[in-house]
Amino acid sequence: MDKIVSLCRRRGFVFPSSEIYGGLGSAYDYGHYGVLAKNNIKALWLQAMVQERDDIVALDSAIILNPRVWEASGHVTGFTDPLVDCRTCKLRFRADRLEDASCGRRPSKRPGETADCDLTEARQFNLMFKTQVGAVEDSSSVAYLRPETAQGIFVNFKNVLQLARRKPPFGIAQIGKSFRNEITPGNFLFRTREFEQMEMEYFVPPAEAEQWYRYWIDQRFAWYTKYGLREDHLRIRPHEADELAHYARAASDIEYLFPIGWSELEGIADRGDFDLTQHTNASGTKLEFVGEGGERYTPYVVEPAGGPDRTLLAMLIDAYDEEVVAERDRTVLRLHPAVAPVKAAVLPLIPRNADMVEKARGLYDELRKRHFVEYDDGGQIGRRYRRQDEIGTPFAFTIDDQTLEDDTVTVRDRDSLAQERLPIGGVRDWLGEALERPWRTPKA
Ligand code: ATP
Image 1 (cartoon, rainbow, N blue to C red):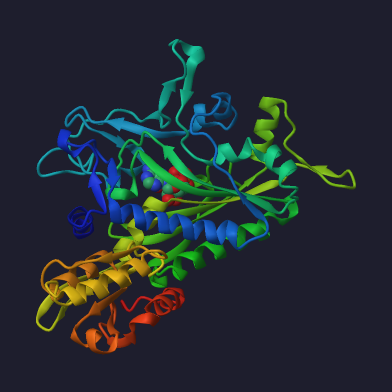
Image 2: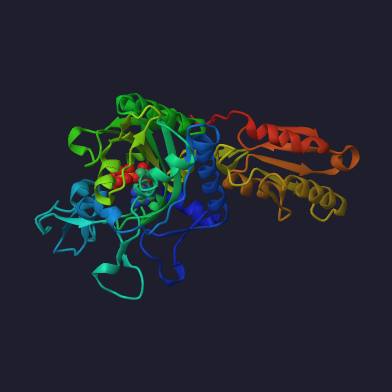
């Protein structure tokens, strides 16, 4: 994890937030490459969930909703984690995760490990951030930053059902920020207090819930492997009955083997009719499906819920590689080309050579209309390759002496380091095709 954090800092993927003021624990800002890579992940999710399907539509709901939404959903009373304080080291811990925690003393101890640890009884701590809406500060102005995007979908069920003219099974997909006042955030992007979620609520006839629950577990697992995560670093873990959230009939996590051990990457839950029933009762608006023949029922909901920050972290970890090539160390991010922030680099071999620069600039201008590509004429060619390797750029096109003679360029493959020559006029199409090819990590 330390290597990933340092590469992200060094190459401008992710910075500690408000760093010049000493940071704010577990808050991060995305730099250029981080923005591009995370946007790619979100776009690939939307492509799979909405663009390539007939049965799912998109939504972008507000972050601050009517607070009654969170009363009806059970979050005001139930969205809590058990918290303990240590009177000795003055830190707070999640009571159900003590085995993963370390206390503030040196050498650090697991909370409760020694007789000196003086832990309070566990109490329930609500994870929602409170704020108020409007100029008057009283209990009637209390509102919350959403702790999940899902509720914004449920309260729009009727709008979408009518306007999109859908009938179950159909889904509503949303990507957006969520906020949780996590007791113990940490492990870089894995657990932060402000993060994005990619959630889809799939509304189905109750009798089909079990079948769709299995279907979405398979679909989502396949999505992660398609975009490069190694299959032996992924697993599906069904929740035990005593672990199920208050709304869930069944749930499974897709887990990734993070450096901190197997941990949730995405959760798939069968939420039954809990949410639509709660909002129907609390709002007085019937959230049900009425068929043409007059049959009516409250659909069940199957929900795949993941997050682009955690997904990016898993992809960076999976991609990170170090090797020795020609007696020199090479650090390379073997990201799936669709996820890589920059798709290709254009490099004039000799930056002082005006003809090479002109050709390289011309190619760069042509390619950048379609893809994020980079032009780099700073320093030795080997160093420029290394820089692109570290940000995971899958291809580099080099303009050299031969280009000036026969209008061909070399293309260097990030993973195999193989080089071949291509006519400069064919580079655009070649790159388009290369980026579409199925890709598997060469990492063992
Ligand atoms: P955990 O048990 O790890 O707290 P959860 O089960 O509460 O997670 P969900 O409510 O299922 O998480 O959220 C769905 C997805 O949102 C998670 O799989 C993860 O990708 C993302 N997510 C949730 N909380 C965070 C967080 N604090 N930081 C980053 N991503 C998060």
